[in-house]
Amino acid sequence: MPVITVKIAKGRDLKTKREFVKAVTDSAVKILKVKSEWVTVLIEEFDRKNWASGGELHSDKFGKGFGKKTNKK
Image (tube, rainbow, N blue to C red; front, top):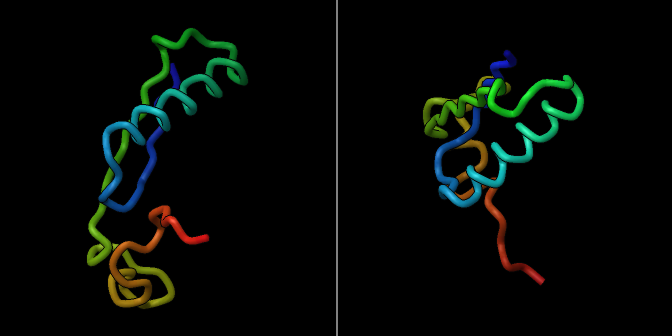
């Protein structure tokens, strides 16, 4: 019974989370040879002001909206 914990920054919509947990579950089923109902995916979300790397808060280091898709061409 795999339990997979994913830690991400807050801000993703439910559609994106549904797509993500489906992909993670499908991969676990295929690779670990388990039933999908045995796979648990936990999503822990953090504010960027509570997440740091290299001694700097992500809210300061990357700014608002970092990591989200944009429509740049």
